[in-house]
Amino acid sequence: MEVTRAAQLVVGGADRMALTRQVRAGSLVRVRHGGYATELGVDATERHLQLVAATWPLLGENAVLSHASAAVLHGLPTWEQDLTKVIVTRPEGGHGRAGTCLHARLGTLEPDQVCQLDGLRVTSLARTAVDRACGLSYERAVATLDAALRAGVQHSELEHIVRLSKRRHGIGIARAALAFADGASESVGESVSRVVIAQVGLPEPALQVEIRDRHGRWVARSDFGWLEQRVVGEFDGRIKYLGDEASVADTVIREKAREQAIRDTGWVVRPLDLGRSVQPGCPSSPSPGGFRPRARPH
Image 1 (cartoon, one colour):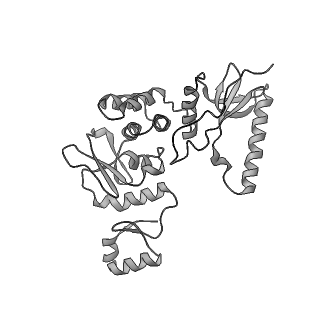
Image 2 (tube, helix red, strand yellow):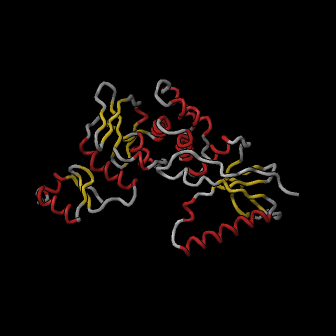
Image 3 (tube, rainbow, N blue to C red):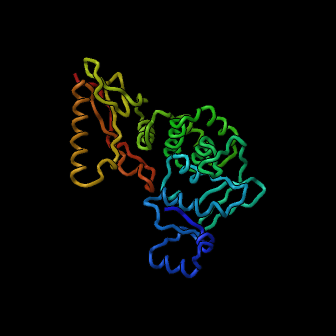
């Protein structure tokens, strides 16, 4: 799925009309004007990386990939609707613009806020996380900052960037999300679940709780735990129930056996079902799904 610029193909012997015929025949696909691949990426993330590869040679030396484009390269959470354009940041004093394939923003980047990834100039992981948090809903900002902390960014580094960005649009959401962020959350679903738990007024849970039997043998690890009540909460995303009938049945059987093993140790298991709220492209309006922690029965 390597992307090649039209100029390179012409140098290699193809003419513009030949490229058009190949696109019509399906042997080439147009990633953007002047950029071609043998096939498009299988998902929005891969297609965005192709769009970056097709666009990067057209950018000047002062452009730095940022926001959602940088998030893809750093492995931070992204949502499909964020990946339709390559996003770059250029120094203030230039010209920002939004086109069909490119959104150029203006902004000041400190030297330590720019790094090299795969030969591309990209905003640092910490700067990318804060940039993203400023433009997302609160729960998605939490998920993004959780992921940055999990990847090794220090909380103090994120705080420093937030302080420097006090006049930016959306910085209030980023500041509140950072105060709530916790690198122990291991997925977007767990991050959004934590937000839901707080929104419905439940006590703050412990994260990644190890469950052991009375002999001290490891049984399972749960997403959330209320230790005094001996209640564990599990993020119940739909994605694990996707696939063919046999694989889904196997997943359900293993999940039920795991939950029973936890219950056999004296813990109560409660699913936190967010349904489609954490899926890419879906509204960020999670529902607690009837989840309530209850004291251990006697």
